[in-house]
Image (cartoon, rainbow, N blue to C red; front, side, top):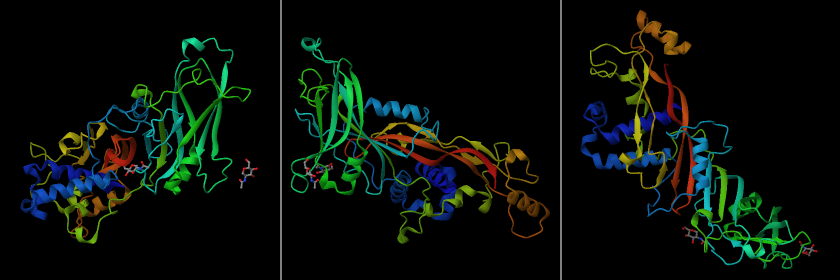
Length: 389
Ligand SMILES: *[C@@H]1O[C@H](CO)[C@@H](O)[C@H](O)[C@H]1NC(C)=O
Ligand SMILES: *[C@@H]1O[C@H](CO)[C@@H](O)[C@H](O)[C@H]1NC(C)=O
């Protein structure tokens, strides 16, 4: 799990390409193809974020308030997950209705959801408007709102044509968001995209007769403010929880520096004469956590990432000399290695490495290719603490 962070850190270092990175040049001769390296580095960084290409950036709309609130609930200002158990999966996707019909009918285009994504829960969010004044004294207090999946009349039972997904009593004089769970329908659309014929909502009196459509109205994408648009919210899991950086690396790219993330960062393994473990006074600094800000604007991603603007990934730096105190959080293995090194019992044994020993996940809120707002959680992105390993 450490390599993910190490890849990000080493990539960010390549992207920022400070002169002090000359150890990279020594090893990998970056100076010859800086552009190609930069584009490969960004591609690799995108893979860490589970994408092949950066989403198209257009003049973006305002993200749905629901998604902003959700982001602020699960993540702190730096995007670091507050509580890893708040979300069941690692992805939340929002979709706006594509139909903009006058009828209470909705259609959501799920083409941006990967086939491999497991749908945990799907919710239809409808904004109920206040009844119009002329009907405010209607004798009904409640109505029955039902959500149906529209079925293909050709294949299915023609007399039915629709399948009931969710039904509930809604107070007529309320206003605000009403949420209906429609997980089974979305799962069926995911397994067969052509079966997605949309959703139909009916409103009936308690006696079962059609309700006057002035009494209970839901905001539509056509006639109402975009903050009240009908929305589908999918809670999914893309199975990347424990992704390793090895995925998607093709044989031909094996010579890239990024396939060897341990080299520059592990430090102790190949310490150059100009070791990074010395501070300005030439003193050896002990292994500790230091800031490393990953700035999405600098990387050129601020066009499609809503939040955060960047995050502090931290990095681990410093030496692990004998004797390793408990504050160095050594493993038993590291303690033994440091003793062997100090006693020079075996040749060629270095001191242990200063590496992250606790990692946190971060959250990204971003626009996908279809301008849907997505919240995704990425594991092992922030070094929580460092230790000698
Ligand atoms: C869904 O969106 C994709 C990509 O934007 C588009 O190619 C496709 O035609 C859309 N499908 C429907 C049914 O509108
Ligand atoms: C079709 O619908 C009718 C009436 O709703 C019902 O009696 C019948 O069992 C259904 N047939 C199938 C195959 O679902």
